[in-house]
Amino acid sequence: MLNGTTAEIKERSALRINPAKTCQPIGAMYAALGIHGCMPHSHGSQGCCSYHRSHLTRHYKDTVIATTSSFTEGSSVFGGMANLNQALENIFTIYKPEIVAIHTTCLSEVIGDDIPTIVKKATEEGKVPPGAYVIHANTPSFVGSHITGFSNMVTAMVKYLAEKTSETKDQINVIPGFVDPTDMRELKRLAGELNVNIVMFPDTSDVLDTPQTGVYEMYPKGGATIEQIKSTGDSIATLALGHFASHPPAIALEDKCGVPSAFLELPIGITATDEYIDALRNYGTVEVPASIVQERGRLLDVVSDMGQYLYGKRVAVFGDPDQVISMTRFLVELDMKPVYVITGSQGNHFEARVTDILKEQAPDAKIKQNADLFELHQWIKQEGVDLLMGNTYGKFIARAENIPFVRFGFPILDRMGHRVFPMVGYQGALRLIDKIIDAFFDKKDREAPEEGIELVQ
Ligand code: SF4
Image (spheres, rainbow, N blue to C red):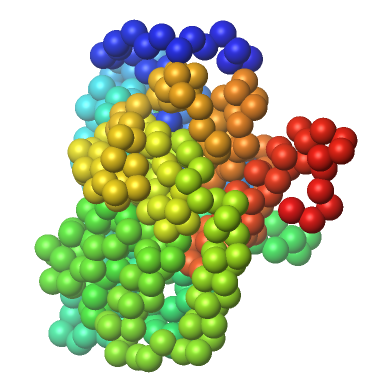
């Protein structure tokens, strides 16, 4: 499919071909699903909402609920106030959520709909039942990416819901970033091993990875409750995992309620997980239990056993900025050589941080924010790599160039492991090494001559 891509690069300023990102509302919709009893609402046309729901459903392999203001030509001209007003009445009457989280789309942003004013009017008209909540985030897709949208919606949770009372609670907030439900579950498990009480928000575990019971539940048991999110203003501290997705809401909570933040990177790999554990240990004033030390030790054993197959391998990595930053760090820990590192999201922090991570291992690496897969493919054409890592869209490059490919990040539309196995923590690191090694050995087995194939590698 991409066999026609050439190695010759022509400078482009505006055009992006196969951008390594998707649009803001997808991230906002995903974040909203991490509140218990929440109905995400898309203020725009039906097409946007359908696309966002189907994209999330294909990745999570579970039903993603959301409602829409169903803009028509009329709303495009006169604004979406009447549609949103009617939508709120319908949603609370028919679907009975505890909270509606509204995000905007390109169209409603261009029109300039004032969501707080519309919600105020609907509330005054009795369309929002007593005790129910409506929050909103502006998510114009002509700027930012799905990570910006995620971050904006989590910041909205803080702005609308977090409260400070006179009593500090013995709990630590964890803002997990744009990771899968199984990653959130793993982050909670690690905190549980340390016996540290955390409030994770948003939390999509037990929302988008629910067990099959034969009974459909519109609002599954998972998600951070409204009471929990309110209580984040009384927590001891906030661990914000990921510069792009989680630092802005942590700063908002610091500003609003004075809760101090620890700004961490996503705990992918050894050192980043150590930092997460260390922050929990510090703020929770606990000792690291033997179970965690052993878990880490088993990972180190695998790293030293497999090092011979990983050393010096050239890697191309693409995807969401927080995930790519931590993945690059992990690849360096494995003595691999990330030579091309890109994200589709914008933000100078990405290039600065990755440059710093690679300053000794791969000082000549090509690193780019606001980048696309077309250019990444051209770099690979110019000088090949041993491994490609990223979301499902990378498979076309991997096929064209016959490169081992490890899927991670969002979206993964053609595999299912991400639904059940985490990539964060020591367990996640083990899984990633397993996938990398398998990808190398599968290629070797496929291509070895009959007399060269080995039973034991
Ligand atoms: S980019 Fe804009 S118009 Fe397109 S799906 Fe996203 S919100 Fe809708």
